[in-house]
Image (cartoon, rainbow, N blue to C red; front, side, top):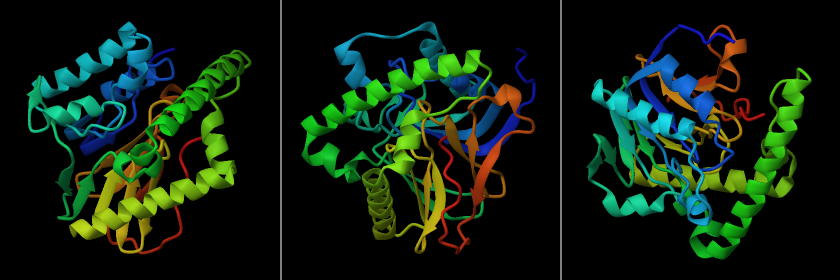
Length: 277
């Protein structure tokens, strides 16, 4: 298998929910993405390192270390990297306004696009009532989610050996289970309300592992997805246009897979295609 030699340049890249330190993290796909892309600014939108899982059992293979080193090399070459912690790496919230290896840590950030629009960047867990008000239930949910990811990983090992493409069990369940869809909708609306309250035109978040790019009323809602299930990233082109990229198996995709795009002026409220398989 030969990796592509192309390099894709963007003004900005947002990635979230890598969950480094867990067996579900698709670090190899992420490394391929980082090698094939460059940006002036990269936002790490929370749950980059999974402190919850690492506290229970230590798991840190070389590929996860390679991801960290690759990000730091981009910083040394001039890329601005901003880390907005999430709930799984919440310990970093004690170090906001500091830098580690040139990586800036912030509670949240305001990003101004090339065409002058302001986007609020945050992880989104503060709008998750389960995480905020019933932490024990969130931890129980995290265990169930980990089990689903474990099952999904072994299921896809068999699929790959049989020549079938990657398929995400947990993403499938999210789309099919009514309560999950209601949760996602409520979360999206709550985040959009916060953006509206802050007086910005859009918001970029992560947390729910559900990549999306659509208008909610007058707010452009962007979710960069995750690198456990769907392997997605949000990018900004140099003209300010935003797109969500799907990077499940880039060696078999030509040209670069673009799944959805939108601009601040887009007025249709019909959701764009959900990216997670």
